[in-house]
Amino acid sequence: MNKDIGRDTGNRVRIETILGKYGVYIALLVLFVTLSIASSSFLTVTNLFNILKQNSVYGILAVGMTFVIVTGGIDLSVGAIVAMSACFAASLAQDGTTTPILAAISVGLLIGVACGAFSGFFIAFANIPAFIATLATCTIVRGIVYVFTDGRPVTGVSNAYKYIGRASWGVVPVAVVLYAAFLLAGTFLLKYTKYGRHVFAIGGNKQAATVSGINVKRVEFLVYVISGFCAAFAGLLLSSRIQTGQPAGGDGYELDAITAAVIGGASLSGGKGSVFGSFIGILVVGILTNGLDLLNVSSYYQQIIKGAIILLAVLADRKKE
Image (cartoon, rainbow, N blue to C red; front, side, top):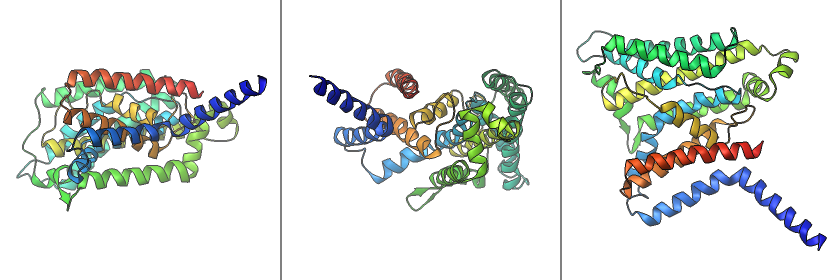
């Protein structure tokens, strides 16, 4: 009897270990196969690239968010930064203007870096909790965007500006190529550099990281700068694709980025996560949304399903601790 109990316990532990380590990949495979059977329109080259293109904005946001979450922080300002960078860049990249396209893009990116540095300063050097600091940044940035645009979308962008969000190289959208570049750069920085090791060390135990000589304040400051940069680029990509800068753009995008990172294995308590994992999380949410659209499921029900996914992802994260 005791041997049977021990065997059952051992099997249960092994199953839990497998699910904890490979559960998201199993879920992605099941989702992929199910939708391939349920809809003949799902498993096509056009649709698969469309999934990647539609989710490239969220994916780039998730790259920056992963760095923040690994330190044990959170960034609620990325959606507002998306709108701000989009509106300012779009206002400069007008059709017929003499402003170089690179200057417009640079301004948008600098805005993101400045917003990330603003949050990072108060979090790292003033010891304000990340939730409060980034929520304040979000509110301030949203206000600036509405003042700048007077609540109106910025239209009339040039063809050169539209290129990054709408052009394709053969069957591959340029947006997907840019997202892949962010994935590679983020993976390299977080996994293979000294800075990346310091990010994990802070998330694992901030006090121990300080004692070991890591400049905790600088590392924390920089993760929010990285997150701001990623949010700004996502804003440029979004406004290029829809051909306007929307002052309300990016609303709620921070939740999609957090969801993708957590589904991909990042721990909200810090010390765990990967940029590739955030990509898997983006695929899970993106494929699910695309499949539900193909099956004509109401967007209202989709919101319920996405909310349930967020809850399950957090529960799974707590289970691992």
